[in-house]
Amino acid sequence: MVNNVLLLMVCQNILINTLNNLGDDKGEVARVILEKIHRVAESEGLRDEGLYKKYPNPQEIIEKIHRGIGGELLQLSLWAPMELEKLASLDKFNRGLYDIGMALQGLDDLSDMEEDLDANKVNLGISHLINNLSFEKDNLKLKFWISDENITGEFRRFLSQCTKECIEKSLEGFEKLREGGYPVSTNEAVTLMKILFKLRGLENLWEISYENR
Image 1: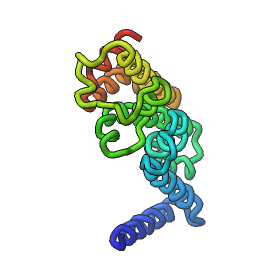
Image 2: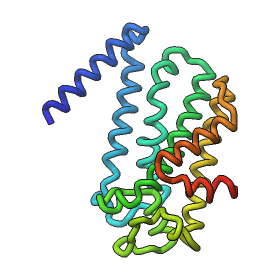
Image 3: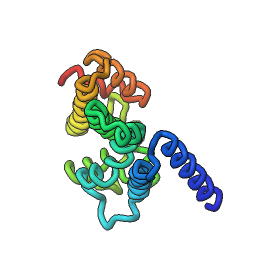
């Protein structure tokens, strides 16, 4: 614990000194970024299922957890230039990164359902199963859940809807990047998302969700 605190203090000092050199002599930008980092850490801490009397619903997870560890985490790289430069294009980039971060966190939750179930971590996909499809958590068995033979009926529709939402959210984010002047086409955005699905072992969900959207 002591080592972690010292590391945090060192990182904080590096951040403040760097921003001072960039013109943040009053420390306002550093304060904003440190608040954002705290928000991300706080959101990660809320993933412990033991904190809740009942499994949180999807909207709670999106607002209290995914917003921090997904959307705002991806935005961190832009907060310093946004506060220092005040450019309209950076604001569009920032909003685009938020959408992409939220989409990727949703995708991560789908790929981590079995792991999070075993570790008693709050997961958006599991929340959908419990709150929207009336599954009992104690009876959930997700081993090999992503294999083709298991993706049938109601479960198939659930996975299709969740992944469609991730894809649409990410494409909205890439569109905002284009509006800000970042040279990424729709085809390039789709290709990138398809690769990310494959890296997470979810390529069959891509076929279910994107090709039939």
